[in-house]
Image (cartoon, rainbow, N blue to C red):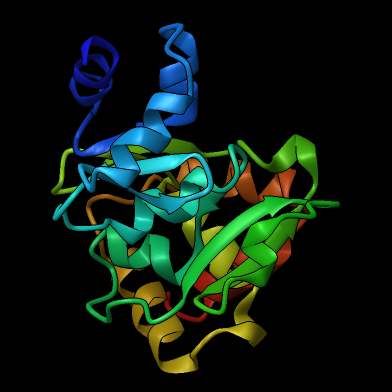
Length: 195
């Protein structure tokens, strides 16, 4: 019973990972035991919640890869630049990724060079208290300009206009990101139209 109680006390914001159990030198057998006793349930590979807790899809999807970063329209939604709740989650991952996110029907994957993956990443606190990794607003704008052909044009145009007039924008950062991503001219031309 001691190990079971230890496990139940390890939950952070409603979630527990196999890594948490391993880091505390608790045999994994007790995870299985708690599942059989219907005290916890497995929601993803290596991720568990207490029974009857609500599942936060943002946390579950990001737990599938340490390199997964919310981007594009999903990031716009999180930053308040889109009021359309994502039906599919936009996630950016490094080139060469081969994992379970590719099999998810509710995920749009975008790929980038490994050296650009963490450019503009911030920790974002959800209402649930959980922290996820998402691109900051300026990097998100660069991403949607880069991926314009893959996105809803109405949402794209609305986001560009809102960003242009926003007090949250940081044009210095925007153009710094654009240079590193090799889309400086594309970004400049997009905003020239609005001037």
